[in-house]
Image (cartoon, rainbow, N blue to C red; front, top):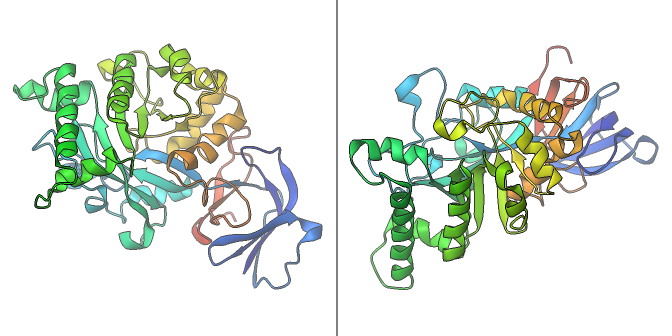
Length: 383
Protein backbone atom coordinates (compact mmCIF):
# COMPACT_ATOMS: atom_id res chain seq x y z
CA UNK A 1 0.00 0.00 0.00
CA UNK A 2 0.93 3.63 -0.60
CA UNK A 3 0.12 6.57 1.65
CA UNK A 4 0.16 10.26 0.74
CA UNK A 5 0.50 12.25 3.96
CA UNK A 6 0.26 15.93 4.96
CA UNK A 7 -1.96 16.53 1.93
CA UNK A 8 -4.02 19.60 1.16
CA UNK A 9 -6.88 18.40 -1.04
CA UNK A 10 -8.71 20.57 -3.56
CA UNK A 11 -11.86 18.96 -4.94
CA UNK A 12 -14.80 20.40 -6.85
CA UNK A 13 -17.49 20.27 -4.17
CA UNK A 14 -15.62 21.01 -0.92
CA UNK A 15 -13.36 23.75 0.46
CA UNK A 16 -9.66 22.98 0.79
CA UNK A 17 -9.03 20.16 3.26
CA UNK A 18 -5.70 20.20 5.07
CA UNK A 19 -3.61 17.55 6.86
CA UNK A 20 -5.24 14.71 4.95
CA UNK A 21 -3.98 11.17 4.37
CA UNK A 22 -4.81 9.23 1.20
CA UNK A 23 -4.18 5.50 1.30
CA UNK A 24 -3.94 3.67 -2.02
CA UNK A 25 -4.09 -0.06 -2.70
CA UNK A 26 -4.47 -1.96 -5.97
CA UNK A 27 -4.96 1.22 -7.95
CA UNK A 28 -7.87 2.40 -5.80
CA UNK A 29 -8.29 4.91 -3.02
CA UNK A 30 -8.64 2.71 0.06
CA UNK A 31 -9.11 5.48 2.60
CA UNK A 32 -9.15 9.27 2.86
CA UNK A 33 -9.24 11.19 6.09
CA UNK A 34 -7.58 13.44 8.65
CA UNK A 35 -4.01 12.62 9.52
CA UNK A 36 -4.88 11.87 13.11
CA UNK A 37 -7.51 9.27 12.20
CA UNK A 38 -5.73 7.02 9.68
CA UNK A 39 -3.00 4.48 10.42
CA UNK A 40 -0.28 4.50 7.78
CA UNK A 41 1.94 1.87 9.41
CA UNK A 42 0.84 -0.93 7.00
CA UNK A 43 1.93 1.22 4.02
CA UNK A 44 5.27 0.29 2.50
CA UNK A 45 5.58 3.55 0.57
CA UNK A 46 5.00 7.07 1.85
CA UNK A 47 4.77 10.29 -0.18
CA UNK A 48 4.94 13.52 1.81
CA UNK A 49 2.71 16.17 0.25
CA UNK A 50 3.48 18.92 2.76
CA UNK A 51 3.19 22.36 1.19
CA UNK A 52 1.55 20.98 -1.94
CA UNK A 53 -2.02 20.62 -3.25
CA UNK A 54 -3.67 17.37 -4.42
CA UNK A 55 -6.52 17.36 -6.94
CA UNK A 56 -8.30 14.53 -8.71
CA UNK A 57 -6.71 13.62 -12.02
CA UNK A 58 -8.05 15.89 -14.73
CA UNK A 59 -10.24 14.60 -17.57
CA UNK A 60 -10.28 15.97 -21.11
CA UNK A 61 -13.50 14.75 -22.71
CA UNK A 62 -12.62 15.74 -26.29
CA UNK A 63 -9.18 15.05 -27.81
CA UNK A 64 -7.55 13.45 -30.81
CA UNK A 65 -4.68 12.25 -28.65
CA UNK A 66 -2.58 9.63 -30.40
CA UNK A 67 -4.83 9.58 -33.46
CA UNK A 68 -3.77 12.99 -34.83
CA UNK A 69 -0.12 12.85 -33.89
CA UNK A 70 2.11 15.86 -33.68
CA UNK A 71 5.27 16.48 -35.68
CA UNK A 72 4.89 13.79 -38.35
CA UNK A 73 2.39 15.34 -40.78
CA UNK A 74 0.24 13.04 -42.93
CA UNK A 75 1.73 9.79 -41.60
CA UNK A 76 0.28 10.35 -38.14
CA UNK A 77 -3.02 11.84 -39.30
CA UNK A 78 -5.40 8.93 -38.70
CA UNK A 79 -8.53 10.64 -37.43
CA UNK A 80 -10.46 11.46 -40.63
CA UNK A 81 -11.30 8.71 -43.14
CA UNK A 82 -12.48 11.14 -45.79
CA UNK A 83 -13.06 8.54 -48.51
CA UNK A 84 -16.75 8.58 -47.51
CA UNK A 85 -18.79 11.14 -45.53
CA UNK A 86 -20.59 8.36 -43.62
CA UNK A 87 -18.15 6.16 -41.69
CA UNK A 88 -19.82 5.08 -38.42
CA UNK A 89 -17.89 1.80 -38.49
CA UNK A 90 -14.49 3.48 -38.04
CA UNK A 91 -13.09 3.02 -34.53
CA UNK A 92 -10.70 5.42 -32.84
CA UNK A 93 -8.91 2.49 -31.19
CA UNK A 94 -7.59 1.42 -34.59
CA UNK A 95 -5.84 4.77 -35.11
CA UNK A 96 -4.47 5.58 -31.64
CA UNK A 97 -0.71 5.44 -31.17
CA UNK A 98 -0.28 5.11 -27.39
CA UNK A 99 3.42 6.01 -27.77
CA UNK A 100 2.57 9.47 -29.13
CA UNK A 101 4.42 12.25 -27.30
CA UNK A 102 1.06 13.76 -26.42
CA UNK A 103 0.51 11.14 -23.73
CA UNK A 104 3.65 12.36 -21.94
CA UNK A 105 2.45 15.96 -22.29
CA UNK A 106 -0.92 15.00 -20.79
CA UNK A 107 0.71 13.26 -17.82
CA UNK A 108 2.93 16.29 -17.14
CA UNK A 109 -0.18 18.47 -17.24
CA UNK A 110 -2.08 16.45 -14.64
CA UNK A 111 -4.47 14.82 -17.10
CA UNK A 112 -5.21 11.16 -16.34
CA UNK A 113 -8.20 10.32 -18.58
CA UNK A 114 -9.12 11.38 -22.11
CA UNK A 115 -11.73 10.64 -24.70
CA UNK A 116 -10.25 10.18 -28.18
CA UNK A 117 -12.63 10.97 -31.05
CA UNK A 118 -12.48 10.62 -34.81
CA UNK A 119 -12.31 13.99 -36.54
CA UNK A 120 -15.09 16.17 -37.89
CA UNK A 121 -14.41 16.00 -41.63
CA UNK A 122 -17.16 13.40 -42.04
CA UNK A 123 -20.84 13.72 -41.26
CA UNK A 124 -20.57 10.52 -39.22
CA UNK A 125 -16.96 9.92 -38.30
CA UNK A 126 -16.89 6.77 -36.18
CA UNK A 127 -16.67 5.30 -32.71
CA UNK A 128 -14.90 7.18 -29.89
CA UNK A 129 -12.72 5.63 -27.18
CA UNK A 130 -11.92 6.54 -23.57
CA UNK A 131 -8.37 5.80 -22.45
CA UNK A 132 -6.16 6.20 -19.41
CA UNK A 133 -3.14 8.45 -19.63
CA UNK A 134 -0.31 5.97 -19.12
CA UNK A 135 2.55 6.77 -21.52
CA UNK A 136 4.43 3.90 -23.16
CA UNK A 137 1.75 1.27 -22.54
CA UNK A 138 0.13 -0.83 -25.24
CA UNK A 139 -3.41 0.21 -26.05
CA UNK A 140 -5.03 -2.82 -24.44
CA UNK A 141 -3.52 -1.74 -21.10
CA UNK A 142 -5.02 1.75 -21.17
CA UNK A 143 -8.48 1.27 -22.68
CA UNK A 144 -11.39 2.18 -20.40
CA UNK A 145 -14.14 2.02 -23.03
CA UNK A 146 -13.36 1.19 -26.65
CA UNK A 147 -16.95 1.87 -27.77
CA UNK A 148 -17.75 5.08 -25.92
CA UNK A 149 -19.72 7.20 -28.39
CA UNK A 150 -20.53 7.85 -32.04
CA UNK A 151 -18.96 10.99 -33.53
CA UNK A 152 -21.01 13.14 -35.90
CA UNK A 153 -20.35 16.62 -37.28
CA UNK A 154 -22.48 19.52 -38.46
CA UNK A 155 -21.60 22.69 -40.28
CA UNK A 156 -18.41 23.94 -41.83
CA UNK A 157 -16.09 20.94 -41.66
CA UNK A 158 -18.04 18.27 -43.59
CA UNK A 159 -19.16 20.94 -46.09
CA UNK A 160 -15.53 21.88 -46.63
CA UNK A 161 -14.06 18.40 -46.92
CA UNK A 162 -16.75 16.92 -49.15
CA UNK A 163 -18.99 19.64 -50.56
CA UNK A 164 -16.22 21.72 -52.12
CA UNK A 165 -15.53 18.80 -54.45
CA UNK A 166 -19.13 18.76 -55.61
CA UNK A 167 -20.04 15.77 -53.45
CA UNK A 168 -22.65 15.45 -50.73
CA UNK A 169 -22.96 17.15 -48.36
CA UNK A 170 -22.77 20.57 -49.91
CA UNK A 171 -25.20 22.26 -47.51
CA UNK A 172 -26.38 22.08 -43.91
CA UNK A 173 -29.57 20.54 -45.26
CA UNK A 174 -27.45 17.86 -46.90
CA UNK A 175 -25.60 17.08 -43.66
CA UNK A 176 -28.82 16.62 -41.69
CA UNK A 177 -30.33 14.57 -44.50
CA UNK A 178 -27.35 12.20 -44.56
CA UNK A 179 -27.63 11.70 -40.80
CA UNK A 180 -31.36 11.01 -41.06
CA UNK A 181 -30.86 8.62 -43.96
CA UNK A 182 -28.22 6.63 -42.10
CA UNK A 183 -30.29 6.41 -38.92
CA UNK A 184 -33.47 5.42 -40.77
CA UNK A 185 -31.53 2.73 -42.62
CA UNK A 186 -30.33 1.34 -39.31
CA UNK A 187 -33.85 1.53 -37.87
CA UNK A 188 -35.29 -0.35 -40.85
CA UNK A 189 -32.67 -3.08 -40.51
CA UNK A 190 -33.13 -3.44 -36.76
CA UNK A 191 -34.26 -6.92 -35.81
CA UNK A 192 -34.00 -8.29 -39.35
CA UNK A 193 -31.85 -11.27 -40.24
CA UNK A 194 -29.44 -9.52 -42.57
CA UNK A 195 -25.79 -10.38 -42.85
CA UNK A 196 -23.58 -8.30 -40.57
CA UNK A 197 -23.24 -4.68 -41.60
CA UNK A 198 -20.70 -2.76 -39.53
CA UNK A 199 -22.13 0.65 -40.37
CA UNK A 200 -25.60 -0.38 -39.21
CA UNK A 201 -24.21 -2.05 -36.09
CA UNK A 202 -22.52 1.18 -35.01
CA UNK A 203 -25.63 3.26 -35.75
CA UNK A 204 -27.80 0.72 -33.96
CA UNK A 205 -25.85 1.26 -30.74
CA UNK A 206 -26.73 4.94 -30.93
CA UNK A 207 -30.39 4.29 -31.79
CA UNK A 208 -30.71 1.99 -28.78
CA UNK A 209 -28.94 4.56 -26.56
CA UNK A 210 -26.20 2.08 -25.80
CA UNK A 211 -23.77 4.89 -26.63
CA UNK A 212 -24.22 8.66 -26.99
CA UNK A 213 -23.86 10.60 -30.20
CA UNK A 214 -21.06 13.15 -29.86
CA UNK A 215 -22.04 15.89 -32.31
CA UNK A 216 -19.55 18.56 -33.36
CA UNK A 217 -21.46 21.88 -33.47
CA UNK A 218 -20.04 25.40 -33.19
CA UNK A 219 -22.79 27.70 -34.47
CA UNK A 220 -26.01 28.28 -32.56
CA UNK A 221 -28.14 27.00 -35.45
CA UNK A 222 -26.06 23.81 -35.67
CA UNK A 223 -26.39 23.29 -31.93
CA UNK A 224 -30.17 23.42 -32.26
CA UNK A 225 -30.05 21.09 -35.29
CA UNK A 226 -28.14 18.58 -33.15
CA UNK A 227 -30.87 18.78 -30.52
CA UNK A 228 -33.62 18.50 -33.12
CA UNK A 229 -32.08 15.41 -34.75
CA UNK A 230 -31.52 13.62 -31.47
CA UNK A 231 -35.06 14.35 -30.29
CA UNK A 232 -36.36 13.01 -33.60
CA UNK A 233 -34.49 9.72 -33.17
CA UNK A 234 -34.47 9.60 -29.33
CA UNK A 235 -30.68 9.66 -29.04
CA UNK A 236 -28.39 10.35 -26.08
CA UNK A 237 -26.75 13.64 -27.08
CA UNK A 238 -23.37 15.09 -26.22
CA UNK A 239 -22.60 18.38 -28.01
CA UNK A 240 -18.94 19.06 -28.73
CA UNK A 241 -17.45 22.61 -28.84
CA UNK A 242 -20.68 24.65 -28.39
CA UNK A 243 -18.81 27.82 -29.38
CA UNK A 244 -21.98 29.92 -29.83
CA UNK A 245 -23.87 28.19 -27.05
CA UNK A 246 -23.65 31.29 -24.87
CA UNK A 247 -25.84 33.09 -27.41
CA UNK A 248 -28.68 30.66 -26.70
CA UNK A 249 -27.82 29.78 -23.10
CA UNK A 250 -31.36 30.37 -21.86
CA UNK A 251 -32.65 27.79 -24.35
CA UNK A 252 -29.83 25.31 -23.66
CA UNK A 253 -30.55 25.53 -19.94
CA UNK A 254 -33.89 23.82 -20.61
CA UNK A 255 -31.96 20.82 -22.00
CA UNK A 256 -29.29 20.57 -19.29
CA UNK A 257 -30.77 17.40 -17.77
CA UNK A 258 -30.74 15.47 -21.04
CA UNK A 259 -27.91 16.98 -23.13
CA UNK A 260 -24.23 17.10 -22.14
CA UNK A 261 -21.92 19.90 -23.25
CA UNK A 262 -18.16 20.08 -23.83
CA UNK A 263 -16.87 23.65 -24.32
CA UNK A 264 -13.82 24.60 -26.32
CA UNK A 265 -11.23 24.86 -27.50
CA UNK A 266 -11.21 28.60 -26.88
CA UNK A 267 -7.44 29.10 -26.62
CA UNK A 268 -7.21 29.52 -30.38
CA UNK A 269 -7.63 32.08 -33.14
CA UNK A 270 -10.83 32.69 -35.07
CA UNK A 271 -9.34 30.76 -37.99
CA UNK A 272 -12.67 29.38 -39.20
CA UNK A 273 -15.93 31.09 -40.04
CA UNK A 274 -17.68 29.20 -37.27
CA UNK A 275 -15.27 30.64 -34.69
CA UNK A 276 -15.98 34.31 -35.34
CA UNK A 277 -18.07 34.51 -32.14
CA UNK A 278 -15.39 32.79 -30.02
CA UNK A 279 -15.21 34.20 -26.46
CA UNK A 280 -14.10 33.19 -22.98
CA UNK A 281 -17.35 34.66 -21.68
CA UNK A 282 -19.08 31.44 -22.78
CA UNK A 283 -17.86 29.59 -19.69
CA UNK A 284 -19.18 32.15 -17.24
CA UNK A 285 -22.46 32.34 -19.13
CA UNK A 286 -22.97 28.58 -18.94
CA UNK A 287 -22.23 28.65 -15.21
CA UNK A 288 -24.66 31.53 -14.68
CA UNK A 289 -27.36 29.44 -16.34
CA UNK A 290 -26.40 26.42 -14.21
CA UNK A 291 -25.49 24.32 -17.25
CA UNK A 292 -22.85 21.68 -16.44
CA UNK A 293 -20.01 21.47 -18.95
CA UNK A 294 -16.53 20.10 -19.45
CA UNK A 295 -13.60 22.19 -20.65
CA UNK A 296 -11.71 20.65 -23.57
CA UNK A 297 -8.55 21.22 -25.63
CA UNK A 298 -9.48 19.29 -28.78
CA UNK A 299 -5.78 18.30 -28.77
CA UNK A 300 -3.79 18.91 -30.92
CA UNK A 301 -5.96 21.88 -32.02
CA UNK A 302 -4.90 23.29 -28.66
CA UNK A 303 -2.07 21.27 -27.10
CA UNK A 304 -3.31 19.14 -24.24
CA UNK A 305 -0.85 20.71 -21.83
CA UNK A 306 -2.78 23.99 -22.23
CA UNK A 307 -5.92 22.69 -20.49
CA UNK A 308 -4.76 24.45 -17.34
CA UNK A 309 -4.23 27.70 -19.25
CA UNK A 310 -7.72 27.38 -20.71
CA UNK A 311 -9.22 27.06 -17.24
CA UNK A 312 -7.23 30.03 -16.00
CA UNK A 313 -8.44 32.15 -18.92
CA UNK A 314 -12.05 31.18 -18.22
CA UNK A 315 -11.54 32.17 -14.57
CA UNK A 316 -10.00 35.49 -15.64
CA UNK A 317 -13.22 36.14 -17.58
CA UNK A 318 -15.51 35.50 -14.64
CA UNK A 319 -15.84 31.74 -14.20
CA UNK A 320 -15.51 30.77 -10.55
CA UNK A 321 -12.56 28.45 -9.78
CA UNK A 322 -14.73 25.72 -8.26
CA UNK A 323 -16.80 25.39 -11.44
CA UNK A 324 -13.59 25.45 -13.48
CA UNK A 325 -12.28 22.51 -11.45
CA UNK A 326 -15.61 20.69 -11.83
CA UNK A 327 -15.32 21.04 -15.60
CA UNK A 328 -12.25 18.78 -15.63
CA UNK A 329 -13.23 16.50 -12.74
CA UNK A 330 -16.80 15.76 -11.65
CA UNK A 331 -18.62 17.25 -14.65
CA UNK A 332 -16.16 15.66 -17.06
CA UNK A 333 -16.49 12.28 -15.35
CA UNK A 334 -20.27 12.49 -15.66
CA UNK A 335 -20.07 13.31 -19.37
CA UNK A 336 -18.00 10.15 -19.95
CA UNK A 337 -20.20 8.06 -17.62
CA UNK A 338 -17.24 7.56 -15.29
CA UNK A 339 -18.60 9.16 -12.12
CA UNK A 340 -18.46 5.85 -10.25
CA UNK A 341 -14.68 5.63 -10.65
CA UNK A 342 -13.24 9.03 -11.63
CA UNK A 343 -13.40 12.72 -10.87
CA UNK A 344 -13.10 12.89 -7.08
CA UNK A 345 -10.93 11.85 -4.16
CA UNK A 346 -13.16 9.46 -2.26
CA UNK A 347 -12.88 5.91 -0.99
CA UNK A 348 -13.33 3.28 -3.69
CA UNK A 349 -12.54 5.51 -6.67
CA UNK A 350 -9.53 5.08 -8.92
CA UNK A 351 -6.33 6.56 -7.55
CA UNK A 352 -6.11 9.20 -10.29
CA UNK A 353 -4.35 12.01 -8.44
CA UNK A 354 -2.23 15.04 -9.19
CA UNK A 355 0.15 16.76 -6.80
CA UNK A 356 0.75 20.44 -7.60
CA UNK A 357 3.37 22.71 -6.05
CA UNK A 358 0.59 25.29 -5.57
CA UNK A 359 -3.09 25.44 -6.41
CA UNK A 360 -3.25 24.99 -10.21
CA UNK A 361 -6.10 27.44 -10.83
CA UNK A 362 -5.74 30.22 -8.27
CA UNK A 363 -1.96 30.21 -7.82
CA UNK A 364 -0.71 28.92 -11.20
CA UNK A 365 0.71 25.78 -9.62
CA UNK A 366 2.53 23.20 -11.73
CA UNK A 367 2.09 19.44 -11.52
CA UNK A 368 4.97 17.71 -9.74
CA UNK A 369 3.43 14.21 -9.61
CA UNK A 370 0.68 12.57 -11.64
CA UNK A 371 -0.77 9.20 -10.74
CA UNK A 372 -3.15 7.12 -12.87
CA UNK A 373 -4.78 4.19 -11.06
CA UNK A 374 -2.04 4.37 -8.44
CA UNK A 375 0.74 4.25 -11.03
CA UNK A 376 3.08 7.23 -11.12
CA UNK A 377 3.05 8.40 -14.75
CA UNK A 378 4.90 11.65 -14.18
CA UNK A 379 7.28 12.81 -11.46
CA UNK A 380 9.02 16.17 -11.55
CA UNK A 381 12.76 16.26 -10.99
CA UNK A 382 12.04 18.82 -8.27
CA UNK A 383 10.04 16.32 -6.21
